[in-house]
Image (tube, rainbow, N blue to C red):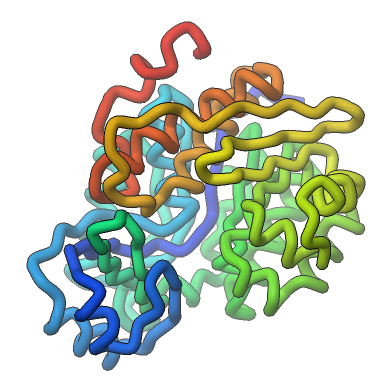
Length: 330
């Protein structure tokens, strides 16, 4: 097997995040469930954007956030995602490349507008996400650079992109190329609504031994297994994948590989500001550890450090030096 030219190649929704403050009254007026994520169409995206307060824009999307976190940790990271030939598409391309992430997916003029996520953050740091997928859900198999997939040490995929049929086919093609090249495949379940819609498909991926590393949170673990008890669910799902990683918010995280189980507490923080991207950055830290051939506990620790940094400010991208925070771990 040749040496990888990228440590991790992520594939996911290329979304521009627009983050703004909101209060509970605004959420109530708009009939939005606090802490939820809903899919909206372009008309609703324009309407809600017009009602939001001042916002900040940054390239986002779950796997894109993870790629950015990996680059901040000094890991060679790439990203594949579809944007349109419009202003937000140009913002996305410039932003993610400026972070050191390789991003070469051509923009298209026939896929509608670039995707955006309107994120409303309340005073308790909960984020309510309203996502217009637009061009992102038009990532076609021919947009996947299969040679880049074959030359990456780890292929990382987000469950959000499994929902539309076209990008699902693209992800299947990428998985096939990675497996043929003997590379590892990592997959995140992303959200309970993804699990509810595609539970059978996700279990098929595991049963066919197409996933080496699976990321989930407690709610997703319960949704995948039907088990309310954490340890029972953990035992059930870990039997189906070589490495299972489950985040537990303020209770830290657990990883199970074969007969080995490791856990770490959540890192202490000064102030919880915005939980946007916590899981994405945790995955970045953990994958960084795996790319450097670290053990489960050290990889979990890196994930906890990266997640703790991102929840102490607005946005899903690190603002402090993650390499410095990681210290001797990397």
